Length: 202
Image 1 (cartoon, rainbow, N blue to C red):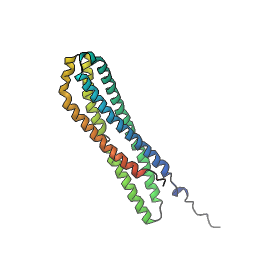
Image 2: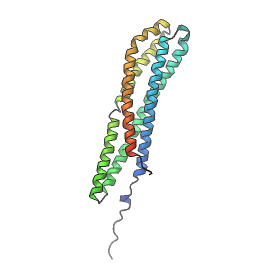
Image 3: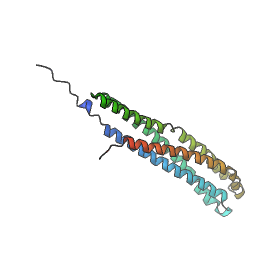
Image 4: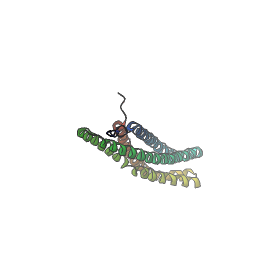
C-alpha cells in the first residue's frame, strides 16, 4: 500500500496576519511616541523660555513647570527607546516568517512577487530604523542643555541668573529643530511601513 503523501497544509498557512498585526501595532506605538516626544520638546523649550523671561514673582511656579517639562521629556525619550526596540523585534520576526513562507511557494512567479514585496517591506523598516540612534542622541543633546539650566536655577533661582540663560536660546532652537527633523523623518517612514504591512480587509 503506497505511503500517504506528506501533508503540506502547515507549510502553506503561516500566521502572517498575526505577525503583521503585531508589527503594525508596534509601528503605531512608535508613531505615538514620536508625536509625544515632539510635543514634549516644544513644551520643555517653552517652559525654559517662561523661566528666562519671567519676573521675580513668577520664577518659582515657572521653574516648577519647567522641571516637570524636563522630567516629561526624559520619560518621552525612554518610551521612544522602548518602542523602537519593540518594533525591531516584531519586524524581525515578521520578515523572517515572511521569507520562510515565500520559500514554500511552488509557483515561481508568485515566489518572485513575494520576494519583491518582502524586500520592499524590509527596506522600509530599515529606512525607519536608520534613525534609531539619531533620535535618542538628538534628545540627549537637548536634554543636556535643559538639565544644566534646571540645575543652575535650582542653585540660584534669581531673575538675573534666569536672564543669563538667554544666551542659550539659539542653541536650544537648533537642537529642538534637529530633533524635530529626525522625528519627522521617522514619522514619515513609520506611516510608509504601516501602509506597506497593514493587513487589507477590503
